[in-house]
Image 1 (spheres, rainbow, N blue to C red):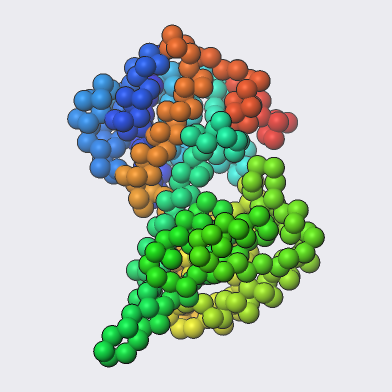
Image 2 (image 1 turned 45 degrees about the vertical axis):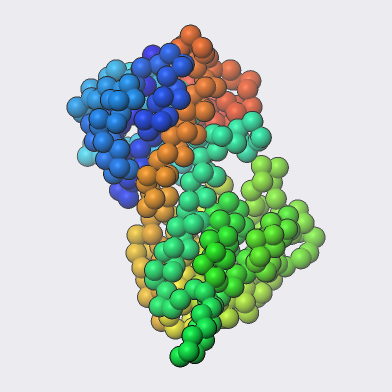
Length: 382
């Protein structure tokens, strides 16, 4: 079977779904590899590096799709409406396997079209967060980098230093940073801000996050009640909270945020719009020159006023809404994502190089969207 790696064409996307290293890791599966010309250039991987790893370079997307049995992608394929009338995967043969981040909750019509095309589609963001699947967890690998980059972006936009500095001319006070959401991205943001010398606080609806936050040297800001003690799903994600809890949380954050120089928003709920955590009134209460980084901007945003791909000035505060933050570290993000996919392929490809998809396997069951012309995932089947 041949694995195809196309060039990503979606806006703000600089990553690639395979690297020379990941191709070498997949070679023992008996697969061959074709890479579209220029697919890795934005991630600092020249075509020759893929050739040296044993892949062939294909001149264009159409030729790549025509010969691919398995297609590895980073982002959701472009639909016909997004791609000038022709769906990005229109030339892919019936029965081919697509492994990608497909954002199915927000694109249910595309899930149906993948089924209608006869494709076997796996959504990598739906891989369950279980021990056996840790090496395939694309959400964690990419969120980890996003949390780091959020702090670096904040430091760039902030007009002051992060650490305390004592000089003959006077003392520079350390920056005060609030991280909202203590998942993978939030914890990395806490660690990075601490390394830069900031005084860090963090908030999360899950009481279980308290120990992790404090172990990184940050102060935990939390509304402790019975609902909060039930605020984590079996998969480790935050649940949607009641309006009453949200009101209590908002009051606590409103008092906390006034003292902050930098706020980093990382809160996401799978399948739902991002929760609104920072209101315009809260932004107005911050000191002039403060910075808000909204990592959830593409899902509706945690901060009122944030805009995808823009830096918005509001009340003297910069609200930064960079799109696709992992892609801003394309080299490392591609390397980690490609390893995630390489590990996933070991699950669906037998040692003789043929497909071996076990629908009873917990990882397969959680991530398989379409197969044999049907939508098979229970969350999307109609």
